[in-house]
Image (cartoon, rainbow, N blue to C red):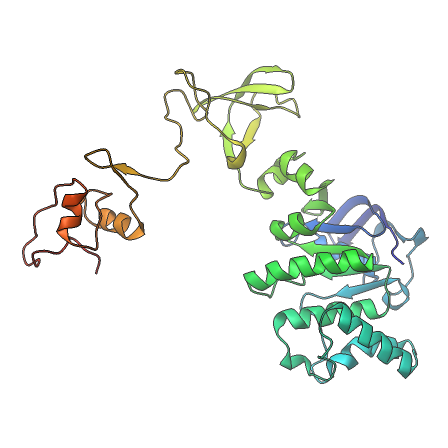
Length: 370
């Protein structure tokens, strides 16, 4: 059965260094919660304090309402999946999954039945007798999850478990993890520096920087309504504009910048001298009629459609990658000139072909790629 996790003014110091500073947070039972931040921000330190491998310098950690101070990792209702998975290479898959049950004294018959059910859960029913070294990266990941779930934890802690996988496998395992969490109902606390993982899998996200919990919210709130400059810069893509707020009304602000005048939402009531961050996905040009456009007065709007070139006679041609490379290699070549074929193709399109360069066989398109 899943349980909630409460952090109450948790601080962790290593000598003069404060790794985690006054973090207060409640992770709900059955929630998929992610800590997101750069390396060294304190994410893993929090995970180790929740799992019992570290005791906080100050504050309290409660799981299911019970204070965990003085309770070791083996006595807590948690299971931790390490970044390197820490599977036993000399054991079979079934022995790996059943190891925690054996340590707890679970009878052999019950242990084997639970291992079988967990292999079905992670869609590897035929892997029981295989060695870990015979499995792919994604299969090892699933075995690590099955081993953690075997002891029926109330809270599953995952320390960047996908970081060693290639991109395609990481994307596939995101969906696998989310599906497993929904099916089991276990509380997941996930550590990552990859915002794509956090935004696609999590119910809520806590963004950390230098030991401080900067903001907690769902993916939409973190992306669209960042509460600090760090969150705005770390999550998503941004363009920075320094300027002065000229007007402010109705939750909107007019910002005067060296690039021109910008208009945007102003949820934090920006004052003079404040920085303004603009997400490229949310930027758009102004309306027609000669008014000022985003990006500065007199700047043409950015064209978002496909690049075409109008040829003589009213026909259109869309240059392909090879044509664009040839245009970049030789400025004498029109950028949209159809290439790679006979000179007659250019004439039929209504374009006067360039003269043959010295040594160029006649009847071939000039400046073809080599």
